[in-house]
Amino acid sequence: MQVEFAHLRERSTSGGWIDFAVFNAKSTSGNNGSLLAELTMRARNAGCKIDQSALVFREGSRTRFYGDQNLVKYLSSLPYVPQFNKAISF
Image (cartoon, rainbow, N blue to C red; front, side):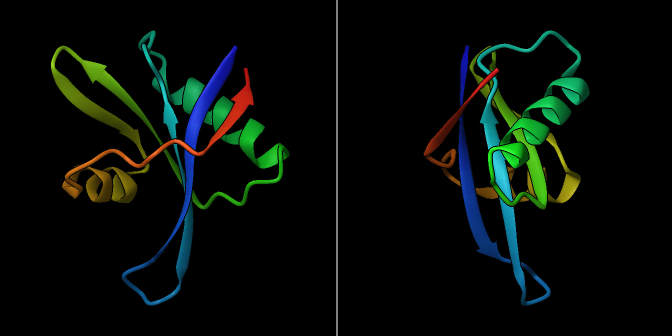
């Protein structure tokens, strides 16, 4: 199975750069922590630098995020979901 994700780099509030991944979790089984850890590890093993990561999924009509608290706060403030630009096998 292929999992799409956005691998992005943005300026952090402290002035440096932060590399993050937002994984497209079309559905979640409730074990979001394990799923996020597995996807993050696979993306890192594929050569992606990831400082923080999160899952994005739909819950009813709402877009939800799960992951690093600061990243979830940032993603929730955006008027869009980052565009998926990579994929890994899972």
